[in-house]
Length: 270
Ligand SMILES: [Zn+2]
Ligand SMILES: [Zn+2]
Image (tube, rainbow, N blue to C red; front, side, top):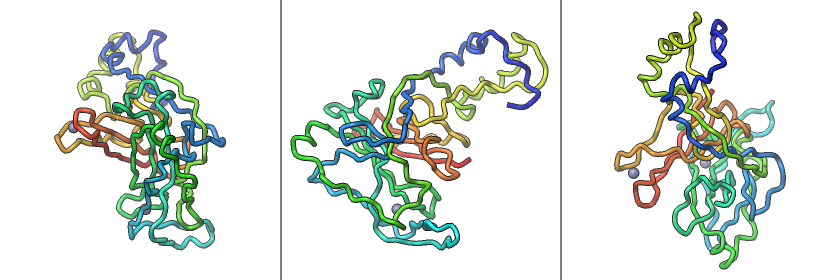
């Protein structure tokens, strides 16, 4: 907010601009804390409950690379096919606000932790909706392949963390404010609150790793559409809590109007 902004009035801005209150959505903040989460727990960067009869995913993009771990010798290493790394595992019991597909109670996310030339981010994510009891009945994979030195970029590797989900009210970032609200904000704010100087809409967007709510874009919004042309819904954001380099966040979306829950993802940089 610019330095010459007037003090925000004691009166809640949401009462001054009622449509703003209407944009509130409930998000579940995941609050990761470094720890040692087990496969039966929700986690960020922890081991996943993976079906033994399903091969662990690998990324074989030819152009993915890492700088390597030695900062004095930042040559690019191109390692070939590498195992993807666990990013997120969510049990339905921990995120009651998230609607799971019928019969599913476990959401898992992996990505390749190398850098990919076409978009310079942690990419090639994969998302899975599963039934935990079925995996337990058939037997979970006993050992998940770990990445070795040179097979990941540190910026794309979350530290194994347990989660303490907590619900919060979330508002759109300024990139997602409706145009007419953006354009009339200042006039309406002044007629109610007076003051001089620039007045920006409040940014009550929660920047955190979260499920639901609004994407915590750090750049202009870029909502994906499904193949049927529906604007997808925000599913979850991963940001801030892990070192994503100069990446602002990784955002996942899905379309619940189409069969098969098509999904897509975006990322942006500071
Ligand atoms: Zn890759
Ligand atoms: Zn759709």
